[in-house]
Image 1 (tube, one colour):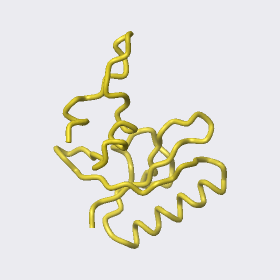
Image 2 (cartoon, one colour):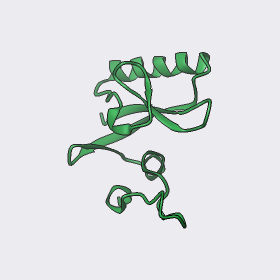
Image 3 (cartoon, rainbow, N blue to C red):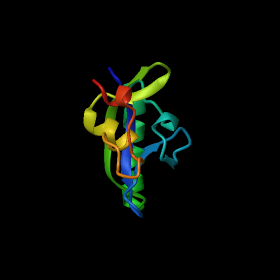
Image 4 (tube, rainbow, N blue to C red):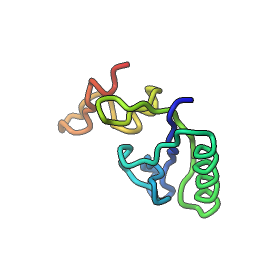
Length: 104
C-alpha cells in the first residue's frame, strides 16, 4: 500500500490544506500526517468527514504520496500542483514551482 495523506480546501479561503498529526489543517504538505496502513487511512477519512461536517474544509481526498529525498511528494501531478503552486512563473516572478518537484 502506498503512503497516503488527507488533503482538502479550507472553506474560508479555498487554500489547499493537509491534515497533520494533531488533527489540525496545515498549509504545508511536509507537515501532513502520513497514513501507512489501512487503519490509519480509515482514521484520516473519518477526520475528514468530521471536518466537512464542521464546515472547516471541503473537497476532502486521500491522496498517495512518496517520500523522496526526505520530502513528501504527491504521486499525481494535480496534487503536486496543489502542493507547490503553478508550474509557470507569474509576471511578478512569484508562483514558480520547483521544476524537479513537478517533473514525474
